[in-house]
Every structure is written in C-alpha cells, then in structure tokens.
Amino acid sequence: MAEIEYDLAIIGAGPGGYTAAIRAAQLGMRVACIEKESQLGGTCLRLGCIPSKALLEATEKFSVAREKFGAFGIQCDQLRMNLPTLLARKDKVVETLAQGVAGLFRKNKIERFVGTAALTGTDQLHITGPTGDSTLRARRILIATGSAPMELPALPFDGTRVISSDQAIALPAVPQELVVIGAGAIGLELSSVWSRLGAKVTILEIHHTTLPGADDEMGRGMERALKKQGLMFHFAVQVIGLRSENGRVQVRFVPRTATAGKGESSVSADVVLVAVGRRPYTRGLQLERAGVRVDQRGRICVNQHWQTSAPNIYAIGDVIGGAMLAHKAEDEAIAVVERMAGKAGHVNYATIPAVVYTAPELAWVGSTEEQLREKNIAYGVGKFRFAANSRALCMDETEGLVKILFDRENDRVLGVHILGPQASALIAEAVLAMEFSASSEDLARTCHAHPSLPEAVREAALAAQGRTLNS
Image (cartoon, rainbow, N blue to C red):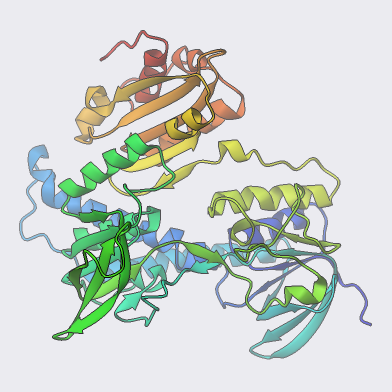
C-alpha cells in the first residue's frame, strides 16, 4: 500500500474546500485538493454567487440610470444594455477571482489535482483526471463537494427551454417571457436580472409568500417591492408540467390544495427557470466504500465536530445539513481544520446571516417573529423605515425598514431583519452584536456616523427602547 503522503486531502475547491485548504496549510499541514473543474472556486464562484452578483450589479445600475437618473438632473438619452459585453464582464470577474484562488494555492503550497475523487477507504482516494488515474493517501479526508440544482419531476432540465441557475447566468438573448419556479433567493435574484433587461417575468411559488423561511413581514415587503418593478407572482401553486404550443411552452400549474385536475392554469414562456432549491452533490464519491452514512435527503451525516461515521473523514458545507450558504461553508472549513490541529474551532449557527441581493436587498440574522412565537418566547420589536433616514433619502432608496427583535426579559437581540439599500453590508453590525450577546440598548447607545444608512439600525434599536428620535 502507498505511504500516506498528505495530512489532509480535500474533495472540492469551492468556498468550503479552498478555505479549508488555505487554513490547513497555514497550520503546517501538507494539503491536497481535488477539484473536477479546471477553474477553482466551485459553484459559488463559477456559476452561483459571483456571476449572479456581477449581473445584478450591472443590471441594477442600468435600471437606476433608466428610471432614476432624471430626478438627479442626469440625462441619459438612448440608454441601452449591450448583453454580450455584460456577459463578458461577468466572465472576467469570475476568471479574476478564480486566478486569485489559484494564486493562494501556490502561495500556500497546496497541491491541486484536477479530476473526480472516489473513496477507496478511510484514508485513500482514487482520482480520475484528464491526464489519467492516480491514487493518494491522507491522514484525514474532508468532503466539501457542495450542491447542485434540484429538478422538478414534471420539468426535467433540458438546458434550453427548461433551465437551472447554471444556464440562467448566461442566456445568449433576453427572453420575451420568462417563467421562474421558486420565489427563494436564487429565483428572485435571477428574475430581477432578466426583468431589468426587458423580460416579462412570472414567478410561481408553492408557498404563500416570497422567501419561505424569512420573516413573513419582510417577505411580503419584498413581494410589494418586486411587484412595483413589474414582476408577477402566483403563490400557493404547484407546477404539474409543460405543454408545447406554437414554438413556445405553456407552464401548467394548479392551486397547491386542489384535487386532481381541478383549477388548472397556465402561463406562456420562452424559457422556464427552475429555482426550487439545491441538493447535496455526492455523485461518484462512493461513500459506502468508506462507511460514510447519509440521511434520507442525501446529506452526509456528521457530528458536532463535522466528523462522518467513518474514522478520519469529515464533511462541511452544502453537502451536510443546515443553510446552503458559502459563508457558512467557509466558517465550517476554518473550524474543522482548526479542530484537526488541536485548536478550538467553533461555528455559531445562530449568527450566520442570509442575504437576498435584489433591489431592495433583504438581509437577516437570528430568529424571525414566526419562530419566536412558535417557541413561546416573549419578545419585543423595534422598527425604523428608510423613508425617515436622511442618507437613504439623498440616495433615493427609501423603500424598506430595519426590524430588531429582542427578548423582553433581558433585552438581548434575538434577530435583525433589514429590507432596504445595502442591507448586505448593514447586517454585519447586527451579526457582530448578536455574536457578543448585545442588547438593543447596546445598539441604541452606540454612536453612528451621520448621515449614513447604519443610523437606521440604531433608530430601530431606539424604537425597541421606546425612544426613537426621527420617526
């Protein structure tokens, strides 16, 4: 048997995998990382978070220039979007960041293997790559293979008419009519991109509102905002199939509670984007060979230290339970590697933020009102609307609010929800506050620059104290 060559072998080079590789190398480990794609960075960098945000940023600038610049005294005659240039810039952003990860691998002497990995034991991997097969052994193996888009049985992907988010970031032309199935973060973000470019967008959602799992008030606020932008919604409906008609497709759906064949409706589309969630990606790993167990949803089972049922094999990120978020995977990566090195790695799952990068943005951390009511926790609420924030008014971005939920017994912050401009940045203050078990009074008594958007967070905390100043 070949000698053990590495302290740690990592399968997958997404945010979880490459972060684990870098941190392990910093801690003195000899690290190998196996990635099936030629570019490092995983789905997040190549097909998900990064390209979608590049498209969102560009199309939001386009939308603002078209619809708001006139009020600022800026005249933009014959404004138009060059789609090939937009897509090329997106690809350049991805390539730049992927090269950055490759540079970090070289800097930290991380050995990279291009190919797919299969477990052949608890300390051994078989790698199938473009230049042939190889085998390596490592004291520990970390699985960070991420996730893939989920299909609907009634609408299997064909890559042209019925697509996933993988294709939705690179459509060669703006569809006249786009149907999006799923009003989660991915569905809303990509709906926004193509709607701003001129597509008529209809969203079908099985739940009663946008963003199931978000605070209900904020989800409904998001729905109102997006309807103003021209997006159309059908809630509490279930898609049952497609029908071809005159070179187009009709997406067939029924009320979620309908009996068979009752209440069927349809909506026309050039392209159908299925954005109903993601599934753990474990294809080809041959987990059973090493005795690695999975649950009924295909997620790898781990303990509180991210160890699987097999000795020396660990897993993090989308492939295990919990939120499928890149920053969650990154935090787990650091913690699991530090534990391997005898340090006290830890992840506080109660303070992992979630963000939807629409306009307005929505970000939150901690509990929703619905969750607190379900747990019978006595809580209070402090709110402040951006319409009363001076910086938001100067920016002409006054839609939305900050909502702080706090424990009535001890004033500890239990959740913060922000619908409004730059919510993705503003939520960091709330995350830090909750990480240090701050009270709403702590936030209320912290000095904030004026005029600034973060003042809205302070004002919401002041409202929790019953003494807001500017509303």
